Length: 580
Image (cartoon, rainbow, N blue to C red; front, side, top):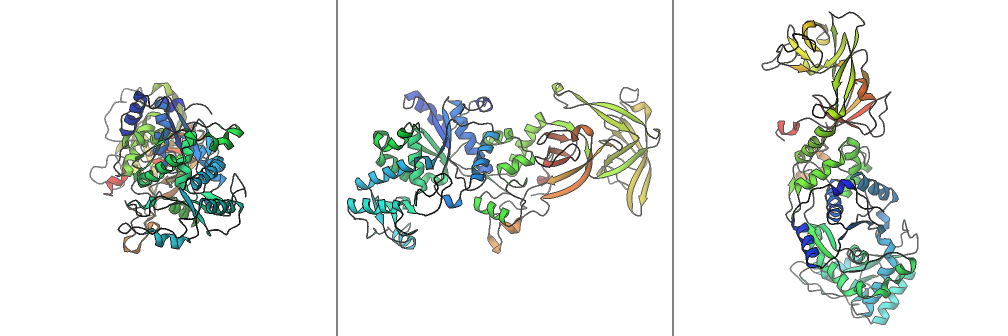
């Protein structure tokens, strides 16, 4: 694999407690180079919370000239799927990163097994016959020490024999476990003789039926880091209590001192840089108005409360991408949130602000009308056609200009006309004038109705107010956008909003669950009209529909002959206006 992308390398140097540790380790000579890793379990799609870890691990490796591996923690095969593996790889690349090595915990199964045998020989592990329920009963509580298993003092020979028979598949699922021999009176429950291996006769996506036993996460994760020579193992705060077990596994197996345990890898030519890694914890990314539990997201998908993992309302990276969020916005979010040891909940508006800031600079402008009302300009001849020139971006001349068709028939937004105007309304009203974006000053002369519904406006365009004419600068209070009624392209527009209507949808008070807090207005599909230059945009292209918001050409469904656009974010924080 190639080195991290130039997008990551261009990130300005930052200071936080993790980067300070890395700088100190390099300056002291403790490490000559930096190795990090991003180690997801392929049991679901990555979400917003993962983006912070991806940016941190890959970003630090790039900033300090090191390497970052992508390693799949595939030790729980019944919940894992190759679909998730491919999606995770795509997500990491979408964020602008490339891994140094693609690894899997399953690559190390033989090494992990040999290390477990070594722990047994060293008197540090034993085979236990207690059931899962019995283990819980023996473990004790936060206020009471645990009790030692009656099988804790088996001989080394008996433990080795039983463990090898576990591997041979002689015993039923759950019949036995291999447990570390640490301290049943420890104040840290994670150190009360934790399980290292369990029997699980489930076919594995990579190893098939070769293994009827699988290593536990804490054990496999620590030794995988050690095998790869990871210098700084960066993880979220919920693993802080697991760090003593992480260190126990690294310190008692001592892979960096026992090359014989690594022989299954060296025989296959698999690179390894066995060393002693350091685990460092940081606060995870928590955002209100979302749930980011994989279990709950899977339930939303399975219960068809959303259209799939890549539903644009989902907080998954696949959903966010489909909605039109640029990867740079996630980099900016990670930078603004920062790295700390203090858990906090970030307001969703911070994320939306990052999206706006990125898209304001990069998204070209187009005109679209999503709730159309027809306008006929009566002082232009029937069949009038002309072409106007518009800048693609008001702040970036390098993006060029485009042709926009104009005729005597137009579409404008229904909300830009009010038959009985309220105080402060400065758009089109009967007898009133408004500036038509780039075309001149429009006056409403007549309102055509069908019952109570307004169906058409008859207007006149001041010929002296056209761009370049003497009256072009005549002052009127409002400016509205439009789409040519003859050349405009009909489009499907999906107006997405937040998936949940409350700040904390995980709050189960009052017998309600996150399912009860789904926002009924999280998506609304309308038919509108767009200028031709919008229809031909490539799938996933970002665009600002002037005065409406930022949109993206739909990732899958959009085509020039049948345009489909997803609203990425409104121009302003509409939830603040609601008092949310």
